[in-house]
Amino acid sequence: KVTVSVLYWCGRLGASASVPMSAAPSYVRIKRHKQTIFLHCDLHNDTVLVLKERIEKLTDVPVLQQRLLLGKQALELNTSLYDCGIEKEDAELVLVLATGEDEWEDPQEALEGPPQAPADGAGDKPAA
Image 1 (cartoon, rainbow, N blue to C red):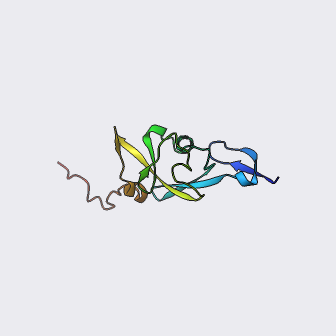
Image 2 (cartoon, rainbow, N blue to C red):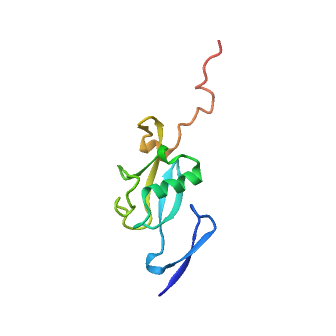
Image 3 (cartoon, one colour):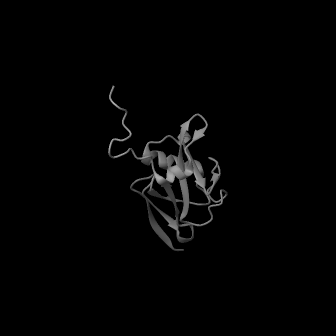
């Protein structure tokens, strides 16, 4: 039986574990504001909640203020990644954040980034 030593750099910084080669962890890509977070995961056993907890450790954004999208589908907290339709590694998820109670960012805005302020000050209010 072949084993491989894997470094979990998200959620368990510095912790290594030996796992059978057939169960070697996969990864998913979490995209937001032109940035990508790569998270190692077990597609069959890790849930969306586990991913959100890892994201919270990296970004300080609470789990309940995060929504992960696979395409246009919002992923449910207690569902395994595999059951959400993530069947192979390198899946791309979009992270959108709550903007209010039951209100969420537009996914396209979450990918493109926050609006830029005018560089020339044209958006400033005139002095009174």
